[in-house]
Image (tube, rainbow, N blue to C red; front, side, top):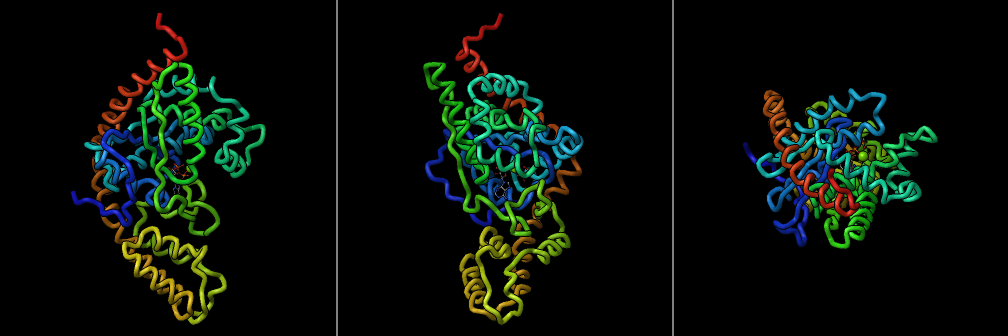
Length: 348
Ligand code: ATP
Ligand code: MG
C-alpha cells in the first residue's frame, strides 16, 4: 500500500528511538480533521521513530455515554479503521482496546488515592467539558476522575511522549503529578515523566468557527467523509461575515477556511498569496473554498481507499486489535507490579 504523505510534517525535537509514545481517542464517533491535525499526523511520523501505542479509550468514553453504551461499542471498529486508513501500521504501532486491559483499571484505582477531588475540579479541560455537558450534581464520578484513568493509560506502557491536541495539556500536567507522587512513594523513579507533543495545529476550529472541532460538537469533517460531504461542509463553513462581495477586503483571522488551509495545504507560499489577495479585496470566498476542497480531497482520497480495503476484512482488524492489546498488557503488567510495590501491596 502507498504511504500517506503528511501535509505538514511536525518537527520532532529531541525524539529518539528510546521514547515510547502513547496516545488515544474516545470511540464516540469517527475521527475527524481535528484529530488528524492535532495528533494523527504526529502519530504517523512517530511510528517511524519509536515504539508507539494507540489506545481506543472505550472506558473513558463510557464516563459520559453510559446512557448510550451502544454509541461507544459501535465506534470501536470505526476508530480502529480510521487509524489503519490513515496509515497507522500495526507492524510499527500497537492499537489497543482500553476495556480489554484490566491492568488499567487497577492502576487507576491505586492512583485515585493520590489525587484530590479539588484538584480534579480545578482541571481546566474537565471544567470546560462539565460546562459543555451541563453536568451539575448529576456529574458521573467516573467523568470527574477520567484524568486519573488517563494517567493510568499513559504510565501503563511507561510512555515518555504523548502527541495530543492543546485540550489535553491539563491531562498531561495531572499525569506528571501522579507520576511524581508514585515515585515519591517508591523512593525511586519507577515511572518516567511523560512530555506532551503538540502539533503545528494544536486546536483546529470547527466548521462554525465557534470552538474546537469535536466529535460530540457536530462541527466536524470526518476522515471517512466522501467528496460530496466535504463539498457540502465547505459550503457552509464560517468565513468573514463582513466579506460580502468578492471585491470587498476580507479578514483572514478567525476565518475557518484559512485556518484549514494553514493546517492542510502543502503549499504555504500559495496560502500566503491567497491571504494577501483576500485581505486586499478582489478574491471571493468561493475561490478560496475551491482551493480548500482540492486540498482536502487530495488528503482524504487515499484514506477513503484504504478504509474501504480494511472495512472488507473485519477479522483482520479484530486480530490487529487483539495483538496490539496483548502487547500493551505485557507492558502494563510490569508497571502495575512497580506501582503495587510502591503502595506496599503484596500478593498472597
Ligand atoms: P469527544 O467530543 O468525544 O471528546 P473529540 O473530538 O474531542 O471527541 P477525543 O477522542 O477526545 O476527540 O480526542 C482525541 C485526540 O484528538 C486528543 O489528542 C485531542 O487533543 C485531539 N483533538 C481532538 N479534537 C481536536 C481539534 N479540534 N484540534 C486538535 N486536536 C484535537
Ligand atoms: Mg475530547
